[in-house]
Structures are given as C-alpha cells and as structure tokens.
Image (cartoon, rainbow, N blue to C red):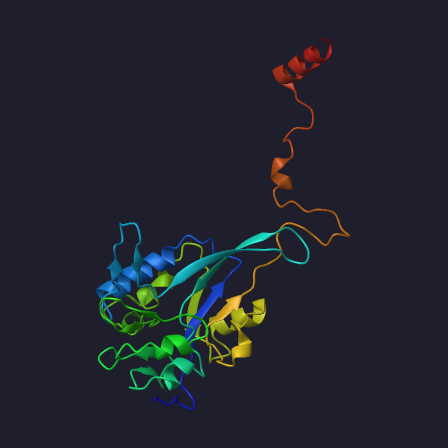
Length: 252
C-alpha cells in the first residue's frame, strides 16, 4: 500500500465558480485533447459514433436543477474531476504504489507503468473521479496538467491546466491553496468556498464557490428583475410622427 506524505510544500488545486460556469463543456473538450496527446496513455473512446458510445474523460460537467429555499429554481452546472485530496483514499488503497501524492505540490498522480488496473482506487474515491481506460487497462485521472504547469517551453500565460486556460467564462481558477495570500485562497475566503462532501474526511484541495441567489428577494419583499432597467421605454410619451399617430388612433 502507498503512504501519503505528512505535509506537502504546496497545495496546487482548482477553485471552480458554480455561479459563473455556463456548462459549455469547453473544459471537458480541452482536457480530453491535451491528455490524449501528451501526458501518459491516450484517453481512448469505444464506438464513439455508434449506438452505444463510451470513452475515458478526466473532467466531466453535470447539470442539476436546484430549488433553493427562497427564489426561483436554478440550473447549476457542476464540473467534476480529481480533487487532489490531502487524505486521499485512492492512494492508500493502491496495492502496487502506482497511485501517489507528490510532496512538492500535493498533486495526486498515477504511475501507469505500475498500475495493474485492479480498480481499487476507483472504489475508494468517494467522488467518482477515476476512470479505467478500456483500451490501456490503466486507471486515468486529472493530473492538473502537470506537463503544462512546469513546462518552460510554453509561454508563462499557458502554464496552467488546460481547462483553466480554455474556460470562456472564467469559472476555473488555479493556484496554491496552501498559501493564504494566493489569489485562489483569497477568492475562497471572499466567496465562502466549500469542500465537496466534507463528511468523507478526505480534505479535498479543490474548492467550489457556491452560486448566488438569482433575481429574487425573500418572499416578504418585492420581486427583483435584473433586466427591468433595460426594458423600460426610452421615452415615456411618443413624439413626432409616432406621437401624432398615437393621438390620431386614440380618436378612432
């Protein structure tokens, strides 16, 4: 079995804004493309254009309709990938040591040459963040694009996970969550970022920013429409030809 480091020098991870994510799946496509062509074994697909397609993805987006206690129902787009937990059960259950957590940055990776495809790590992960590649017979998971973030051949602006670089809505943020002064840590503090399923005790590094209430105030107050200022007529009373026509029609 693999042991976890007692501490890590950094806690690199993602902060995902559920208020901003529009569910466009750009992060899913860019992740699939980058990780098929670069780090580790390609992410295979089976019968992609047939009646029963399947494939390996490291990042997926699920959509849910949520009814808050107050206000209108909301459609929440929920991206999900490995959360690079501090107390990662997928690491400690691995019988070959293929799954491990790096001391230098806290990233959880799989050494595919040592993976025997037993699937124990997938069973241990409470988030369903690991997938067995049906062709390679090895376990695949988010690597935080470790081959990008340290690649000095790339422009500095590109040295971040491809899902973050691609997101058109700016809903994904990357940084050191072990540094309280980092931009991601400050964002979590300001917006009340939360852990996913904290009751599992895995201490996920990745955080989620909760969605804000939409368009309505509590039932005791009046309804608030964010579009109302843009829907008001520009001129309260028509003038010119339209004013004359309006008065003429009133006399008919």
